[in-house]
Image (cartoon, rainbow, N blue to C red):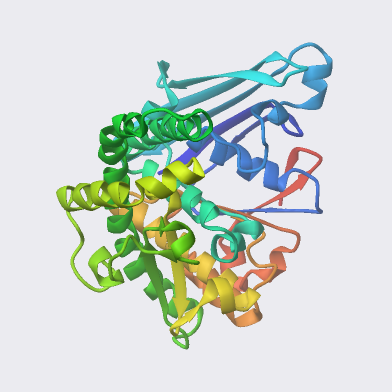
Length: 401
């Protein structure tokens, strides 16, 4: 899978860009604040319909366009896949500049699609400098990453995630109402069937995908560290038991039951466990006014040579583990879709030592379309640089060579 034609209009600092690409490594280089990261963000946005930087889509629209009374951004691409040539187009219209309200319209082969029906058509993997937070930050960051990864290969997961989020919000509102105003606590149980049905599928797919990523990432990590370190990922479904426990436990079961060392649980088994745990913590939920059980509290742990990287890993180790995870994601998407996703690497060399830069450079030598940003293309291995297309980015413009 790769982009052959690409057009941007009024996206970030790109007033107008029209270019063509081929497979292989495309290196975007230049000084900071010229538009390198903005360009990668545009491809990720066209792929997932979500911005990795902007809190609101209105912030993606070129400032001059808004000032001139034309508050819109347009992204268009011709995508070459195994099943043929496709055209993608996404338009962001700002309907209310003051309130930053927008309307997003998506077309795939000139057919208008919803976001849920569109996600996955253009598979991408994006690595940003701040992705070290995948390892070092909160469980919510890792859940967001996991959700977006699985949504690219499983639309049913994406739909269940949307339904689960909606049901969770309604159930929490009911819990707060009972907590504040009193009433029959059994009214909360009316949401349990939907919560379990949609949530159990999320848990099952997460345990499956994490088990697959664990196997691939371990190999990638061994390559990046010259075989000196061993990465292992653990899926940790979370349950907070309230005041009688000061810490969170993994749904009351040993890690091997969740595919860390043994077989994975079935959908029926997860649904049964989920219902039992909801019943067990009902009193605590009513006391606290929130849902304490479910995939909205899941986590993923990263162990290197048995040491938890979130709590004890060095910055270099955390960054290498995150990079191994991203490269594993590339391999996973390739396996699931039968072709390589587009890889977007934003300044990944900046915090890697010389040896890990060299190992990464040679891992990139395949048929994947790769967009990489850097302030200095000399950070790449000479043989990799010789086979790359070099584009200098200057104030939202591409300059070849």
